[in-house]
Every structure is written in structure tokens, then in C-alpha cells.
Length: 367
Image (cartoon, rainbow, N blue to C red):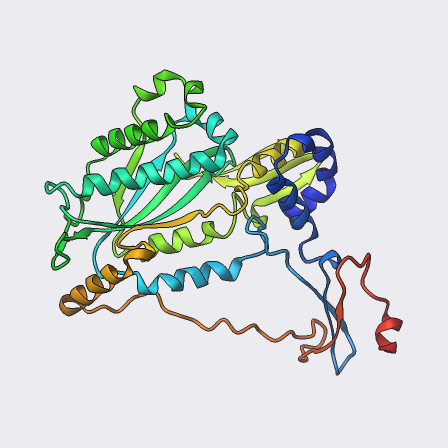
């Protein structure tokens, strides 16, 4: 199986030689750490089978949030962490997408534009939800930023998972929305566009934006998703990885990389082939700025309003029974078994980082 790390190892040097001066530090760091992930460069541990004396090397992972091999367990932990947020009501899944005309600007000013995307979409959603024709109260939002389409092109958008209802201003009553309708997307998209424009006016690069973008329709989707659990499970893996998994990379030959993806319109499985340089460029444009938080909570889900959430859970629990379907599981690390005889392996010694190769067998015997 071809891995992203191997693409970087074979073609990363040429890419950095060509574009290195223009690459932000976060791109350099992501490439370097993914290249070294689970190799002798990061060090690790040596294990030995007490039965057949088979030697096994276990190298450290890079823990970079953009690495396809790392953070797999973190998705499950995050999902279980939503246990205390879940409410026994219908849920809705909303998506706010930046127009294509704005994407060049967003790529140049990622941190600022992603903040604006979150803040404008959340503010628009909360404002319209307070309208008594729809919900009439304060809502709770779980938002996750995505920057890619399935074929790796740059496509920044935010997904929100929202309980179908709100809390009254006197914090005494839960105000349920309709089961199959939450908010009208047409006025929501207009409000979203206006709030994004007003925030963008405060930046130095507002005049770089083509004026026609403010007269076009902005895309907002809203759909019911049952009790929300399936939508949470859909979002969880994307929080801890970027753009693609290693299993989607099919082959690398003749300086070209072939990968699999599902067409978002037809749902059909497709393959794409790119020059290695273009493949690396498409991946790196989804590497987030250092310290940027891609999961955010608004309304009664925000950290400052957990007392309000506690009241809501207590209130709803009286009528519906509050038993979250987000079950917890044990994350005990499985014992390392000998690949030859299946015997439980014994730890022998650590491996220091930056070693060029695994230690020789004679060195292990001497220790």
C-alpha cells in the first residue's frame, strides 16, 4: 500500500526546492513530521519474544493532526466526549459554503477567513433561530470546519450539528422546532452573506474581493438527521485527519499519484491521477494554520453556558429519559504479540530518536 509519507519522501525534496520559500511554516512542519512518522527518526521501543527471540521494533508516531496514520483513536474519544452534550430531540445538519470567488482570498488569508466563516455562519444561524416564526429561543451548535472536496480541491465550508429546538430566554422552557424543518435556507444564506461581508469590511483586503460576490446566492443546506448520532459519527473522523486516508492512495508511479474518491454528485466511485507535485500541493492547502481550532461550540453548547445546558438536559430528561446512545468503550492498548509465534512480547530497550537504522542484533544481545 502506498502511503502519503512515501509520496513525501520521494517527491517532497523536489517540491520544497521549488516552493519552499513560499510555504508557510505549518506546511514544512506537516511534511517533515509525516515523513518521519513511525520511523527510526522519532525513536521508539524494542521488544523481544521470550519464546522464539523474534525482535520487533515499535516506532513513535508524529501525532501531527494532519497525518493519516495518527489520531485514529482520538476520533472515538471525541465522539464519546459528546456524551454529555447529546439531547433526546431531533437533530439537523447544516452546511455553510464559501463561494468559489472567495476561495483564492481564503487561501491567502486562511486564519482570518476561517474565523469569519465560523463567526458569520454561527451568528446568522443563531439570529434567525431566535425568530418566533421558527424556534424563538437560543440554540446550540457544534461546528466543524472542512476545507476539501473528495477530489482534494480547495472547498472551505462549515458543518453544524444542531438540536431541533431552543431554550427560552427565561430558561424555563424547551421550544421544539418542527421535526422535519428547522430554518429556511434562503433567508439564512442572505443573512450569512451579509454578516460575512460586514466582517470582511474591517480587513485590509476587502477591496480585493469582486463586487459581484455580494449579489450572488450563497449556498446553505439544512437537512434532518434523526437523533444526530450518525451525523456525529460522520464528523468525528474528519476532525482528526485531513483530506484523505492512506487507503485511498492506490499507486505512485512515473511521478504520478492515483487516488480513489467518491463523486459528490453521482455517488459513484472514481479515481484521480495527478502529478506528484500537484498532489502534494492539493494536500498541503488543507493543512490548517498553527493553533487553529477546527471544532467550535456555540449557543448553549459553548463552554461558558454549560449551566444552561445542564438545565436543558435536566428538563428534557424528565419527559423523555436522557440516555445517550454514544456508548463509552475501553481504550486499553492491546498487548504486542510476536508476529512469528503469537507469544506476548517483552519490552527490551528504548530507541533514541534520529537513529539512522534499527540497532544491530548483537547490540541487543549485549544489552
